[in-house]
Length: 319
Image (tube, rainbow, N blue to C red):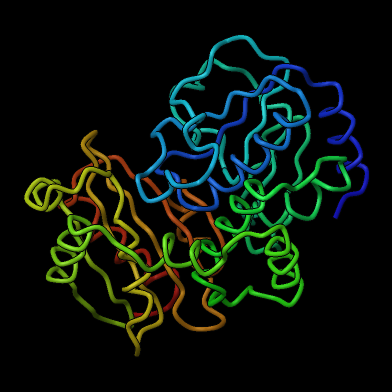
């Protein structure tokens, strides 16, 4: 932990008046939770805040108070630009291509490129939301119930309900403190991890029917046709990777999701202790953690899938 950086961020936030906060495309619970947690805290302190997600808020997270304030594009007017839970600047989306260097970058990915003027990267933390839960009070911001709900969402989702290998006692203590604001943690757990829409369930069915395994890897594929046939409106995997990660007897779980812009999104999950998938994602210009990583690769599914599977086997010695 860099105390100089923490102090510099506190000072920068105190001076800020018009703030833009962004997180990554295809936002997950930690992207939304950390964005909302920081955004609402700064807003409560009297600052003008634009919270931006280029892909918008998925329906499953729209119950969070403040999510209606999140927009898809920023206005140019700002004096402070912050990114949260984004290992690479390009991950915040094309709407920020000409926006300039971020002032502050808050993240927990070990592959973070330290692309801002001030970079608070705590790779041992379970979620970006956990970093904010720890530092917002020392920066002088109160964690109200809506902020606590957002931060708790980030922690619960990024740990898959406290199941990831990096889960630790301090993170559980943070969750207990957030619950003390009156947040209904069982409700957040059910909404963010357990409940699925009928359409998402059909989409899962398509993915599960495409399941394959070989050489210690279990994987599935979701095509544009699968999305169209099931009526699923997102461009992600509806968290099917979490189901794949529960399949026993394998070292790595993967999912390939076709994108409409001739890209394929790949997610990797380490299914055994000691397996580190982050170098594989970095090889393909992606990033993440030892246990969970991802990348977007230009090309067709037919071109990309065999290449990525071979590279994964080679880099992990699974041939």
